[in-house]
Length: 298
Image 1: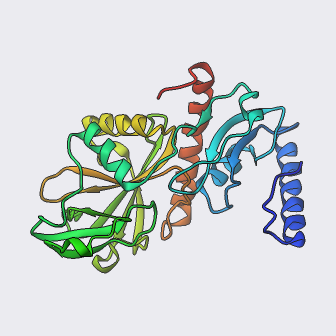
Image 2: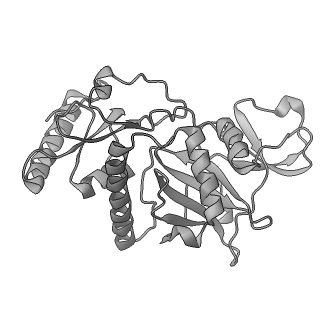
Image 3: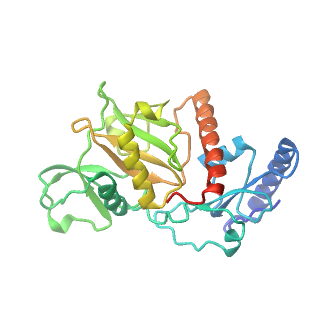
């Protein structure tokens, strides 16, 4: 079964990927004792390092960007901050809901607006009037380029392509810098990745250790309700969220929404990584079965 590949790839790369996909499809056909269910993505085909690829592999589903007769589900998969690609007409003819179809803008400015509506507070500060430390980072998603400056700043130094936010002291009781990576699938939250970082790497994607935890051990029911509202405002059906808990106020801040995640994170041991994918796959399949009966929760 063929897949659509970018013309930017060489002919030999395209042939190699098509052959590999065909071999995987035959394996899935044997595993399923017939044509495997297909999970359709558009407009991009996820990398083998993506969480979605691993979930589909766990479930025995073909991951494709082409029409299939036996459709398990459909998702917009566009790894950019502002998603503008029009979905092909044949996708709507499958009769399936299209997850993340309405999730087209994950800029930090948009996140700030929705964060205020969902939580009643946000992260943005005025760098010209703010006195003391502040964070400057790109408005685009997943740049990991944050750095601390001192305010107030001169108006001439303000970069309109960046955002300016309060400094969040996301340290745990042991003084470790901790990012909480919440897996969110249609209001279900199967697990949280605890990503421990060195202070010098706190704004990067680098970690020195990672573990998994139960969601209830990390967030209150009230906090999860507000996260659900934030996802509704963003048009999200499935994503991973980067959340920081401020050690001074106890408040949580959703600093990034990633509907096209890679994972599980580096430095998570192999057994825990496999457990995480199994947990996510179970919730993913259940959520898709429910979405066929109730097409939208947004």
